[in-house]
Image (tube, rainbow, N blue to C red; front, side):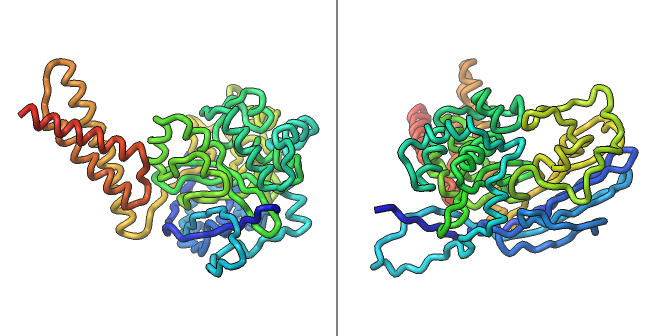
Length: 427
């Protein structure tokens, strides 16, 4: 009998995002900015402030798209808040279970939506070669969730996280066997689409600090809804050092396996999918020549001068913006191409615990390294060991309060306790 599943959601936090784009150039910059679209994991979106755009359109994904013509020295701002929800994919229990759960009520796609999320794009090409490989990976699996799970396991097992990527796109990922979060997402989407499983790349960010872009996937199953997948985080979790960094910094789950069907609810969604139309149209025909020395990048098998050309009238993706320069940016920064943003946790207790976590993390490692570094020179300052233990204790308590602690942090706690006890014995 086929196993049935449902998606269950639970509110985690309320976030505020402050986005800015500063035109530091001497000439006009055109900006296409994706405005946030609601989803089951990102609800109750409230626009708090926004620079009025010249034009607004609606993308096929449901995202509003704002268009700006930004004069030299001018700024565009967008501030919004939303309620974030944790997502879990759980088996449907026997009919005797009367537990009421909040599930995805929009678990049906229109024909147009299904076609859109099965299409082939430069970053997510659906080719015979991709399909043959996907069929080999899924083997005898026929149910879409099990097929997607096998695709996920294959990518996590055989591909390595690497930033920055050499190229963008699923084909580049297959060739180099490594890439960043975007390449993991593009390859998973290509595999799914080749098996007629609607799939989209979610373009967003971690909901912490300043400018922490990220990308992942959602695939669609009738009667269940959009099921989240994050193969890149699962791949990172194979490295214990990176695992500790991700859990501590972003509040991720400690198990990579859990990132099939489950997300922690600590993310921002800027836009859905790749190859999105730019409205009004990007003026490729009248755009000045690409300046000499301007760096182009291989995107979906094509050299693209980001900010000087579109990709057949489309933005490769919107995170959350695409730009058009009329002159070479000097000196250029990442913010010239994407803008920048800062994320705030709106609840006082949540925001305070975040700052305590960051400060105690830094001070713990500072005193720990000082203690062991000075020990190499026969200088054992036990107060440094005591301070490192104290700040780790504070860090551990904060992680437990924020539901971000896992076995490595508890192991550290045991080791730090033993170290502290041994220092007392020396006295």
